[in-house]
Amino acid sequence: MYLEIRNLKKWFKDKLILNIENLKIYSGDKIGVVGVNGAGKSTFLNIISEKIKPEEGILKVSTSYSYITQLNEEYSDGEEKLSGGEKTKLKIENSFKKKANMLIADEPTANLDINAVVKLEKQLINFNGAIILVSHDRKLLDRVCNKIIEIENGKVTEYKGNFTEFYKQKSLEMKRKEIEYISYLKEKKRLEESIQNIENKTKSINRAPKRMGNSEARLHKMGGQKEKASLDRRRKSIETRIKHLNVKEKPIKLEKSKIDFVYSKKIYSKIIIKGNNINKRFGKKIILENADFNILNGSKVALLGSNGSGKTTLIKMIINSQTDIVVSENARIGYFSQELDLLSKDKTILNNIMESSVYDENFVRLTLARLLFKKEDVYKKVSELSGGERVKASFAKIILSESNMLILDEPTNYLDIYSMNALEEVLKDYTGTILFVSHDRKFVEKIADSIIVIKNNKLEQFNGVYSEYIKKKNDKKEDISNRDKKIILENKLAEIVGRISAPSKKDNVEELDKEYNSILEKIKKL
Image (cartoon, rainbow, N blue to C red; front, side, top):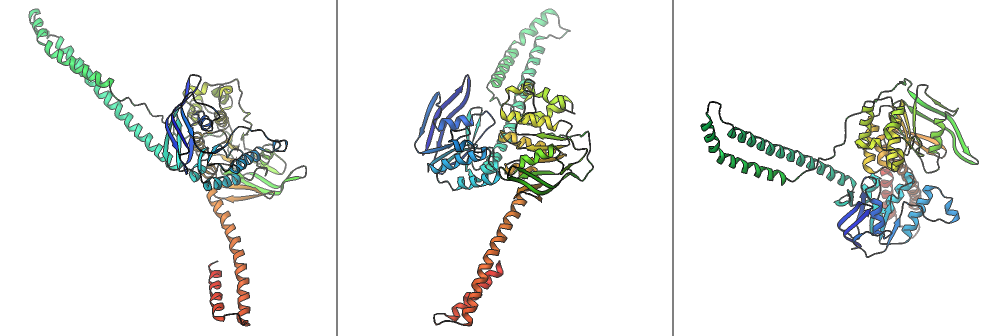
């Protein structure tokens, strides 16, 4: 056993952030930690890495560990000049170099491009010790993890399996809670109706018929006292049963109604953006050279490429209407940048969005609810929002404006898994054109119907979803590998033919003939 926690509590002012009764981590456990933004995931990692101390409870760490943090570390002068992605790669490399038995990682895919994420994934899969991983990358959690820990309202719940299996279990839990809540309401209503019936009967006992005289009415009331006492006992018994009912909280049910977007300007062109012979360089560094691309009206395009390849540069060239890029006249582009500079900090979420919205307040609030903003959240000032909340509010402002095309540069940064799911659902409903950059493979797979890749200063286009693109890329690699194998086998075959034609004393012609046929079969299979 590498780690044990018993009766641990961590407070932030008067709020209980973590309340962990019992948790054990063993060699071979590869644990994904999930929860909404602010649930306490980073706090949990900081406690088990002994960076901060809990107010109560026992923590026993009985093995070596390394920690890939989200926070900036101290770098040497040369390292300080590295990009965000290069710094993250350095942190990962240094962590694996420690050869520790337990690896703790807090959002290790931050700032990485897809190729770097895939490399990290392989390293985590091949890691022999225990892993405790906070990540919003669902594909990474699926490929690496054999357990999921969810932090919800301070409590830690453990689930066996990867993220997809956890999500299925969580969905079943929600359905069970809904059934239990409905059953609770029905039983409570039935008991309350029984009390109402008893009260009606009690009133009828007290009320004497009009035809009776005073003396008869007194006798009638006295005769009903026994029955009234019995009814009172029954009423008290039912009231006690109501008090002792196992109260079930109403499960949070997210608004799932489809959003019907309207656009002030319709685009009739088949091609909404066209780039011909695009050239871009920074000093001596060439970014794009004689590059071409098309974005079709209504398409959802993922723009991929390694860090520094020019994804954000190309987006800014489109936004700024560079001469070699033609944008449809009726296109109204809503641009989401990584700077998150769209919102006025001193105004509320609702005020910010209503300023530019072409929809009424009811529709705006419905969309915000789908992005997991609760009823009162819409009155929060932007200055009070977390990074994830700012992302969602900025996205809502864009999508609810008059824009008929979205350009999104890393919209999933800072989002927790639940917010990412919500964002995906809204984007699926969006009927305009989308061009987006993301390093999250599952997000790309769910949203994009075509791909543009920046490679060798060119723009390669692929019509199809991400998984089809990866398959085609792997097939090409396999074709190259098979071609190389075929050349080697053909050279070997030529050598054997020569030896059969003019065998030396050492050569066994029969064995050479068998080898010849064997190689021939291998070539046919390729």
